[in-house]
Image 1 (cartoon, rainbow, N blue to C red):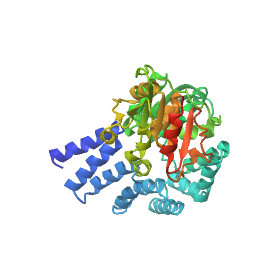
Image 2 (cartoon, rainbow, N blue to C red; image 1 turned 90 degrees about the vertical axis):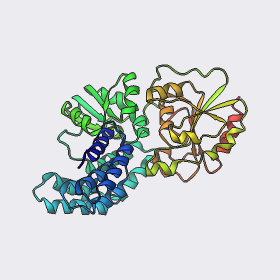
Image 3 (cartoon, rainbow, N blue to C red; image 1 turned 120 degrees about the vertical axis):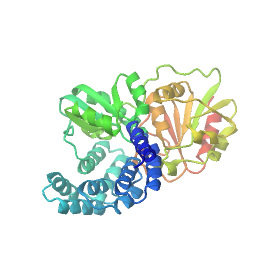
Image 4 (cartoon, one colour; image 1 turned 30 degrees about the vertical axis):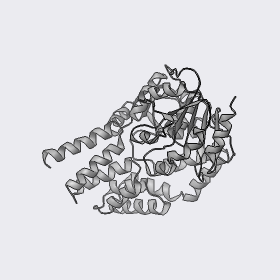
Length: 394
C-alpha cells in the first residue's frame, strides 16, 4: 500500500475505535475501490459491514474470499436463517476438526431453531417477559462470539462487564436493569458507544468505549461479562422502572409556552431506514395552535425539517438529555429518541404508521408498558390523531 492508502486504513481504524461504524464503512469502501480484489482489504470491508449491521453485503463479500474458520464463524453469527448458521458452522468444523469451540458451538446451535426465536418474540409481545427473555438468552448464548471471559449467570462476582448494544435505543431501554446487576458485583463496568459515555457517567456509572480495541482491554479487567439485552433474563424484574432511571444534569429552559420535540428518523442502518418517515407526514401537527416544535434529528437529515419546526443544537447524549428534559413532550418514530425520552421520564408519543413487527410494542392500541409516560399512535393517520389530541391538551 502507498501512503494515501495506509492513511485510509488508519481512518477505518480510528472510526472503529470511536464506534462510528458508518464512517468506517465509507472509508473501507473507498479503500476497496482503490485496491480492488485484495483479500485483506475485502476482509476489512466485510468486517466493518458486519459491525454496521449490513449483514447481507458482508456475507456477499466473505463468500468471495478463501474460507477460514474465523470467516465462517462470522458468517454463522450473522446468518439470517438457522439452516445457514448450521451450514457455516459445519464447514468450520470440517476445516478444523480439533477446534473445541467450533464443535461446542455447532452442537448448541443444532439444538435451536428459528421457530424458537419467533416463539420468544411472541412471548415478549404478549407480555410474558420471563419466558420470552429466557428464550432470547438461550439463542444469544448459542450465537455468542468466542471469548475467554465467562458469561455471567447472575452469581455474585467481583468485577462485572456489561456490554451495550450496537443500537443506542436498545442500550437506553435496558439500562433500567443495571442497578439490579450492580447489586450482584463489587464493581460494575459498562461498555457502550462513545456518544453515550458522558450521559452514563453523569448518572454514576463507570462507562467506557465499546469499540473493539478498548473493549478487549476492559475484558482483561473483569471476571465475567454479559450483554445489556440479556440482563432481564438474568436479574429478572419484569418491565423494571418504567421511566426516570436516567437524569439530565441541566435541563434546558425554553421559556414560556408549550414546547414539543419532533423526530421522524431512525438510524441509518437497513432496519432504521425502514422506520424513517418523510417529514411531510408531520404536516398535521403544524396546525396545532400555541405549540413550538423543535427538531430532534441530528446532522444533514435534520435540514429536511419543515419550516415550522425550529432547529435545535444537540451534542452528545448528555447534552441531548438536557435538551429533552426541558421539553414538555417528545413526538418520535420507533428509534433511540423514544427510549431516551422514556428513560428520562419525559412525556412521549410514538408514531407507528405502518405494520409493527417489533415485540417491544406488544398489541395494545395505545399503551406502551415499557414507559409510563408514553402513548402509541398506530396507523397511517397517526399524526392526524396526534394533532387532534395535542390541540385538546388543555
